[in-house]
Image (cartoon, rainbow, N blue to C red; front, side, top):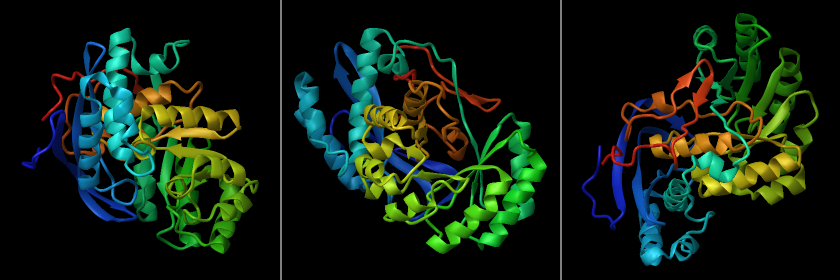
Length: 354
């Protein structure tokens, strides 16, 4: 599980195999490698996780170097100085690891679960989540969708874009007929469509009651995303947030939904702030993971729980890992993920391996 590389104090490397290979824009991955981060603050030891993802964040080596700078600068309780060493655009995973450890310690010191450290006005027992059906032929897609619906998921996410628009529309149609109108369908094109293909797809998908299409165009095409809005299927931006700031997305009116990955955005605090800014502008935030281990995944659950009336989020990803760093305090049941109520993140720091 862990590597043999030399790392700074407070940082421990790990590598976790995936249950099955995962296709990403940067190629197929078979494991998730990163660092467990521990930081002492306000008489508590907080635990964080920095798990870079190729194509989304800095490299593993750059992440380690960033954590070393931050922990050196933050020695002796100078946590603000440590955070200043990490730019969220240049080293988001490293910043996530350090910031999460800091937030965990803060919330522990205040005796609050992390989501209530963000917003102490509500108690939230669970957050709705979607099931990822993925990309497969029509028969397999329908089978996976029916199985997810039988497990209690009422929101499903299908991958599109690897086939022709016509084939994908028929896959979606078959799923809609199989699960009925009471199940929300979301699609993720991962930037695969041209403008013409996206327009054609949305026109044909609108009668099928698709809630939104995630990243229908390449990440750089904000103007194209803006032009697709208002055609009956909402437009979500995901990869586009690696190319553009949220301010640029707002200025371009490029999205109805924003997909927020705390690991990519530099930490739970950044993700929560951007979620509330989006909500203020009438844009729906959806919190997802980057197939993280239990520390980062649970922190993302707290971010989602701190958003009032949050839409189903992409947090049901624990089963994508063949191993994990510790017991999962946020299990999924009947389409919802439990929100830990213990102080801090809710992950037992003494159990976190390595």
